[in-house]
Length: 222
View 1: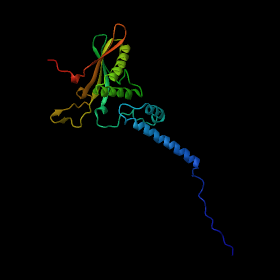
View 2 (view 1 turned 45 degrees about the horizontal axis):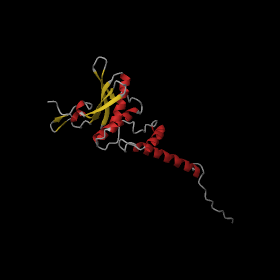
View 3 (view 1 turned 180 degrees about the vertical axis):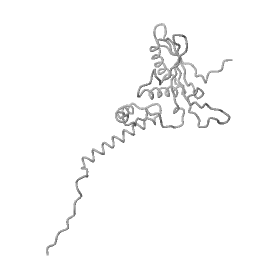
View 4 (view 1 turned 135 degrees about the vertical axis):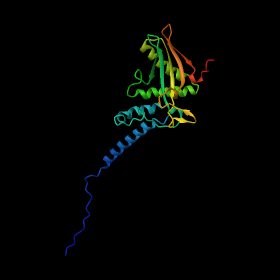
């Protein structure tokens, strides 16, 4: 009587990745996760980022933006509870041809309306606010002078006032401790002027800049 050897069936080759394929998939997955880390961490470093971080961020934006994974251009941001997390913007005031004061906001239609511009100019406003509160006038002067020069050339006016404004968040309860808060979250009562300066064009065509005190620090006129 002949005996038959039991044969063990080997698993089918279909559906099993080769070592080379697994290596390629692992590499792609690593690049994807690393790109996500670069994008998300861009909101964790405050108003400043390293040059290497910026270069990596610009590279990975090529595929994170189409996938709507761009954190910095989102309307929502990671919140740490510090005033630097509040909304910041620039307000430019200058007279028109009739002598009336016109106000422009940056970011806004006149400047900062591009795909990546709103975050850029809000970030610049935060840098101005944080630097001004640290008694560092060099950076705020450079930034506000550049924005003022842009509006002087754009409008043809010779003088303007530029403010860096911080908008505090609206409280959840509009009435607390006997104080009534505005129902409009963009009401002027929520605004604090952190930095204010004048920018003008002198007789030689050079742009001049002088810092003023913030409105909340100016003593009332007697």
